[in-house]
Image (cartoon, rainbow, N blue to C red):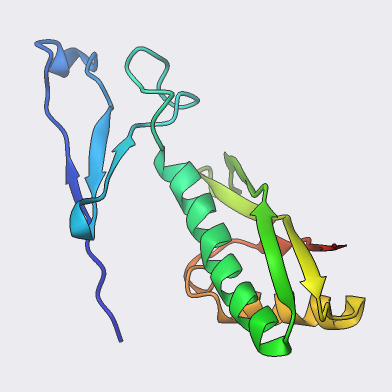
Length: 156
């Protein structure tokens, strides 16, 4: 159905590579010239070898889940006739050791706050729309851990 591309670039910059003393900072390059500073998480690799101001892969996965859910939710709300003024999600991913001893993201909780100014769905319909958005989200369908959705409707 589709193909997606990213180019990741990194340069050594230090003579201490073999001693594990090298920057984990790198850059993600996407279509149309968009570049994003990236790094290992400072939780995994302490500064100065990581870059706190860059996006780490774990954050990116949480953001991708949130973004994908939002895009489906907005589409469904629009089809429902709701006039959405804003959408904000303070998504949270949890990293921990699994039973097999591997460290992994074990769950992500999406907490979208959706502000609607007209034609707001009732509470049950709002919950169903978010459930449907979750079921349709390509990224949520691609991960092997629970993605919980705790939506809040705000009427304006």
